[in-house]
Length: 442
Picture 1 (cartoon, one colour):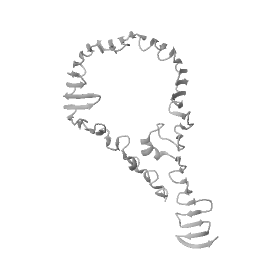
Picture 2 (picture 1 turned 90 degrees about the vertical axis):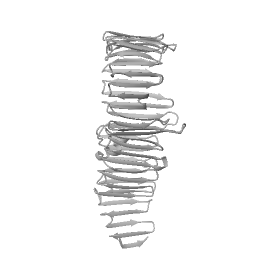
Picture 3 (picture 1 turned 120 degrees about the vertical axis):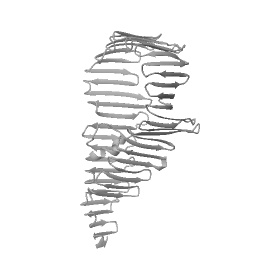
Picture 4 (picture 1 turned 135 degrees about the horizontal axis):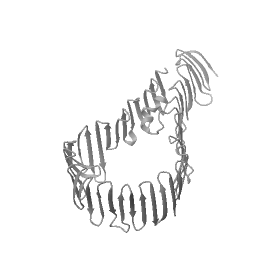
């Protein structure tokens, strides 16, 4: 009974809605899902061994794919479990408030309570991080390098395959013989880095801020005056000349690139597999990319409104996404599935809010699946039309409903079936309160 209750069932799908979009339950052969919007939404795909629960979106989430799990509740907790099938190993990481603990894939355990004391292993792209009364003391291990910070960020010492000392912001250096050398004096006024020293193209950078900076390598020369205002780059392999008066003027000539930009009036950048253009930024922006046989074209209007087409030039398949915020959002997938919504709360397209929040504001929606099933819905069931390969139905709240199965099998119901008329190829039937009152054969 709209808007309090709605139930729909076919051989392929079962759906239950309570209070319009607030509570929903849906089940198909592939997916089971239910939600109490905007508080919680759960999705299960048994055939893929996958489950997802989102609660208080975007603060909480639990996701499992096979043996891999990840869950968090911002800002309270985080849990992550990863499996490495090749090694037959598993790593876990846990965080609750300022406490953390876990186990690496090799079975090493760690724990701590930030900022008082603790050790992390295999996190933040570091082999090991140990701290006591952070930032007063920390020890960081990365490969053969060990860095001590006492306290961060003012004093640090590096030993091992690289050596260095830093008394930030006064003076510091770090050297890995034959690989790189970097340092500073009165940071950020003088900074230097020499990298890729073990290659045929070593790169030397010097920054004398705020007046001048340069980059030198056997292939490239870069000069900056009052960086980032004035910039010039010259490269030989491939040939390239770039002049820039940031952020207004850019002029680039090269073997594989040509760019002209006068911000915010216009921009044109051309590369073999890429185009970037705008006119009166951010009024109109165009992006074009090619990846193998796939071409992508994106038009933006005032940044948040867009029209995107992705096309496979070999197969001819394409997908389209268009939105004019906050009026409508339209998407067509390459398999023919269509999603259309009137009134979008935010101009961002993401599966999470489209499950938990956006349906609360969809005044009208139209959905067509890849197998041709259709759903048109106005005001969360006030008017609803469905079409499947087996038939179609149209419903106006609890007042009227029509169903059609084939050309000569139809049904009309009033007031939730208090009155029902059905016509089949063999007979006609009229019912009141579920009891036949008139029936005749054709």
